[in-house]
Length: 276
Image (cartoon, rainbow, N blue to C red; front, side, top):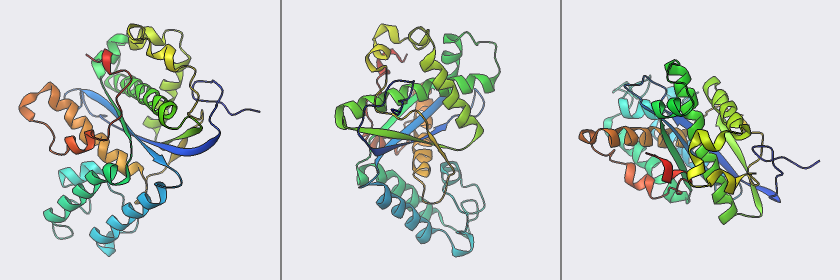
């Protein structure tokens, strides 16, 4: 029996060589988080995964006190906001050490040559497109994340076709209820006859060009975050890109200071022409 691709098509890649790790940001209120952001990092299983996991594990070993290493996981919100049992305690970690950790995370995509994919969808925009203007903030957030994940998956599919046509890719997503619901929403979009209408893709014929997908395995892996998990990297990137998307709506905030180096690793979003 042939393996199936995301969306139900036939998986045509010959071997599994890449993982695409995904995380999201923007689960707060409409005021604090008007956009739902999803970020993915494409990682080569043989040449990049183990060195990257070792790099992340070393960061914990270097900067996190031994008394707090067990079970410790890097979270971008805690890093940038000085919150949590470690980052919130000035006796355990200094501002300079946090700065070095942030700089280390910032360097990872370039250091390891990782392509990044991102989409930041305004929650109200997604709700309006799907006729959900009167739904709850939680529902609007879920549908917006579904749309953003949808766009990111298409971008990964295009990258695989252009750069790794003989391979297929495994999606890796954090194991939590919101992520599972986001995935389910995306899967429904792929199977919805109105997908082009709902996403505005009829304007640029993107959906028709990349469906059926051929290089992304249908069933994702839902993984728990750990100190050396690549999910901590995409958590970091999602936080930064989410803040950048908000800054675009409010220029007074200014561009996030570490947006540019991360942006240099971005793969162009296949849906970018329709983003308003």
